[in-house]
Image (cartoon, rainbow, N blue to C red; front, side, top):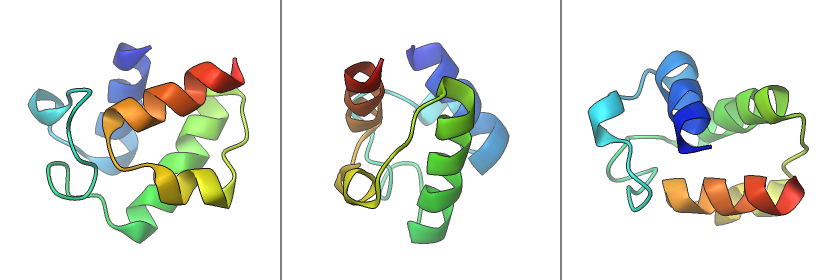
Length: 74
């Protein structure tokens, strides 16, 4: 699953793939601001066929948080 999330981060948000690790901070390490986070959520929803609620989006701080939310929804 990390590979698919990494692909979304690289393709949709233009994140440097070498920076994508489970412990990476979306804001501090990957440079994802609130606007990019909304775009990321839409791309993840499309890729994984899930709905990420606003409250969940606000709670996403690391790549691991994304993985946890996606796993919980599958």
